[in-house]
Length: 377
Image 1 (cartoon, one colour):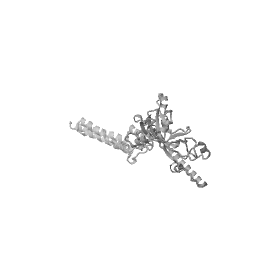
Image 2 (image 1 turned 60 degrees about the horizontal axis):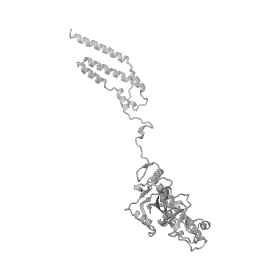
Image 3 (image 1 turned 135 degrees about the vertical axis):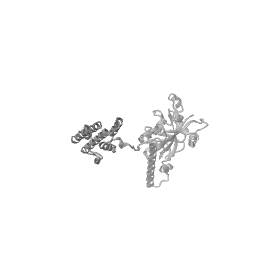
Image 4 (image 1 turned 180 degrees about the vertical axis):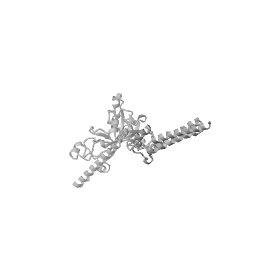
């Protein structure tokens, strides 16, 4: 009897299992989680061939669970091993989960405007760095304005040959028996902007073209042996000369390596460097020697405006004289094509520009400052 009771108990258990298995096969239960996942599943799947149908998965899953239950009853393993096996069986991935993992591992579609579209940013082409200080600007006009203010001048040192040449040119013409040699503090080179340089070159071409037209007119009217020497130079280079212009400044221009200019309205030198000579002037006086340019300003100007810290400076300029006239009345009546005027008493019609003369030009584009000399006497 003791041997029959366990067999009978297992037989009864097997009958109940078969009945339970039949109920699952005939009346399959619906899983609300599966319905939810089925409803939330996107209609477009990247792997449509691997998607199984619900009718094929339910019996397979039920049979697998029942077979695991039967094996656990008839096996002689302890309860701890049973729990371990059940946990292992519980974590076995089903076809649905494997399909879901394949679908999730597919590459995501990038929508327009997403961050993945802009993983690579090309370099900007509108970057204009300053060659002197390295500051970056996004417009060429801003870079030009920065250079015109912050890097307008640079001091020439003793080991540079340009400083000695400018110093010799400046000291030439000073009468040593009348005044002492001027004391030079600094010699600075002016870095003119491309706009100012282009304006100077354009004016030269205008003067050359005007001189060429005037020469053709004279040839057609008859032979003229009294061709002035500056007419020939006008056709060649616009009759360019190296002249001096004296002015005052208020700031610490070029001191301690300072290369910037100020925007003070009474600082004449900085205003000339920044925008050139004023168009409101009746004429721009230039001289052949620095001494004559020095004498053009009152000697006591520094003492009179000491409270403003007025200092004196000499500008070394390139000047396009063009066709030079002598008497303003003759120039206006006979030929209005004169470009500059000799600043002296009315003379003969054979006017010529001597080294001792003052040259007055009427167009600000005709004067290009190149060097600034800060000095005192």
